[in-house]
Image (cartoon, rainbow, N blue to C red):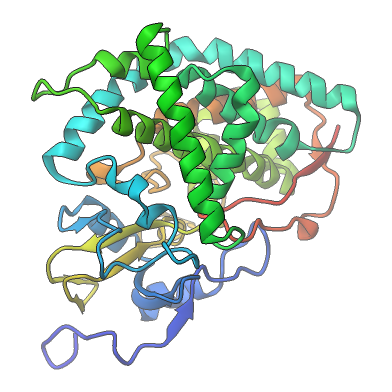
Length: 411
């Protein structure tokens, strides 16, 4: 506050966002400076548009839980995320196919949430374990050193999501390519993005029609005939967009997280040895990896429907806000020894999956995949180690979600 009123952002320095980090697994030094001195900063996205950047735990949690901060990122005055003319995924027609706020969004979430119950996840676990074992066996057969991301991290989540959507095995590579294109900020042109979007929805239109004629044991078959609390069914376009949402949330994020998880645990051999000695730490270790991840990508974007004040700064209606969950998860005001990895940390109220009404729908699935992957790796490859110094790991550039270009390992 200045002179008894909220400060504005007019005189604040504009940071290029995402903020570059000194290493693939290290946080930018600016995070701590921003939390201490400028908790509501000005950031410039790859599109050139500006956002208000939040880095404190309490502020990020507040915004993600506040209904005034919605997801209408295709509003005329919303910041475009990517440097394409359309602004990319968040500003496209894809985002408008599913209600982004209010009662409509909650009805959609309740419909989809029926698939992500604890019972469903428990039933999926043996299948995920079998997939992971097969991929690890194939990686070992090809010989070492190997890229764990390419051999395990990337294919496993797309197998799982395609299985959930009832997509044939032969089409998995297409889904991987679409996922990469939709989440990239800089690598593809607007024309390439639009082409991919058209291809995906054309494919899903045929897939939904096939499931309507011959239902299977998959989420789309279930959603085709499900009704929400108002007795309404999803349109075919909404079903396709739901499939896209599951693909994006469930593939690229988890694929990159598997690689980062293993790299973080192997970057200090004592962490891996701790898990080998005590497998009961796997659950809390996964949560701590999610909290500790300094390379989590863009963050969560929100659009302000009415004037609000955050962290002593007045934000006008129409402001686009960027919530850096990774920075918030390193906030020493929320976590003791925040810059130390504690594999037994409990409780661990990290914000890796967001918070509030828009928290990640697939977080139970992501947790299951990460836990199972770690269990299988510890059992099958206890001697696993990085094949390069940690300083040689390289971050993946231009993606909405953070990742590593590759994770070279040997055993």
